[in-house]
Amino acid sequence: MSSLKQVVLVIGPTPPPFQGVSVLTAQLLGSVLAKEFHFLHIDTTDRRSMANSEHLDLNNIYLAALHGVRSWWNMLRYRPDIVYLPISQNALAFLRDSLFMVPAPWFGAKLIIHLHGGAFDRFYQNANVLTKLLIRFCLHRVDLGIVLSEKFKGIFGTLLPAERVAIVENGLSDEFRDQDCASRPMTRDKLRVVFLGTMMDAKGFADLVHAVPFVIRKVPDVEVVLVGDGTGFAEYAQAQAWIAEQRLENHIKFVGPMGGEEKKRVLLSADVFCFPPRNLHEGQPLVIIEAMSAGLPIVVTRSGAHESMLGEDGALYARDRDPEDLARQLVELLKDPDRRRQMGARNRQRFVQFHTADSFAANLGAAFNRALGISLSTRSRTPQPNAA
Image 1 (cartoon, rainbow, N blue to C red):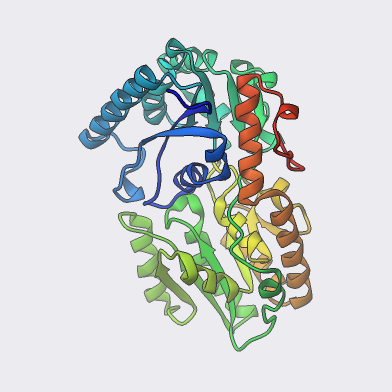
Image 2 (spheres, rainbow, N blue to C red):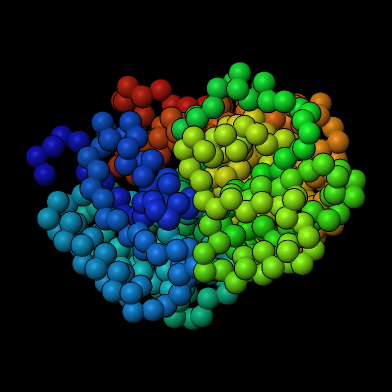
């Protein structure tokens, strides 16, 4: 390719559906890094609902083969300097990822993998012999692995030495103004708890639903608003039936997926954000970063990188799979407007410092240059405080 820019073949999904990896892939492609690198993109999106993920069917096999052929053709034709790939933590998806990882060195590309979860070590330990062999073979070809926080620096173990691992924390565009967050009313006729996420067991939405009867015994005037898609998930239908049976319709609202200004209004109307995942695979959920950007206090479980993101002064932590303990943490915040305000301000501060789209792009660009052996001192970019 005639461009003087280094060529990066980005392999990953874009929205819809809206989930962490697809949102961050789209953000990367539209970031300021497009001025420094020439991006090619293989879109691996399955446009069906999230309920189809991690299932083997003919459509998934067809898509994997199609994307594999396209990636090989692009590597052959354009000879990219970097192949960048968000990798998976389950056997079927990693098998698909291997279609992109194996050929990258053949075409002279530096291979960068980006782990957006927090359970690769458990995935490897529990894999069968053949899958372990494939993982070792693929990771041996990796020039740089990217993880989300210091907590995950050793998640690849001996498969990828620490000197070939970089930290890039997730970041999002700042959709809120400080004055909007600071002027959020701390008292109103009905307090509001907001959840964002897919309505599946792993995200803990059902634990929040089952916590509501315990909450309203202490704080009667409260409503829980759940934003997200539950299409195709049995647990979503079961939760709706349980709410009707318990006559909690006045306290629990499913409002479906939201985006843009509509989602901003919901977050600005919230008193507390709650995200209690059961999923050990969690990394740095974007929904928590959205809540931080909106200046919200948070109730969460001790999963993934939650504690390093929020500290002990930005969140209250509930035991996972324990609706009663979740209710206790919610009640504690709902009854204390001053603490909510202080927590929200601290989370907003952390967002601005560590989790903006600009810091994400700067840190990812530093990782690209590191893989290419280019010193940051030769670039005009000023590294962010948490640059890799």
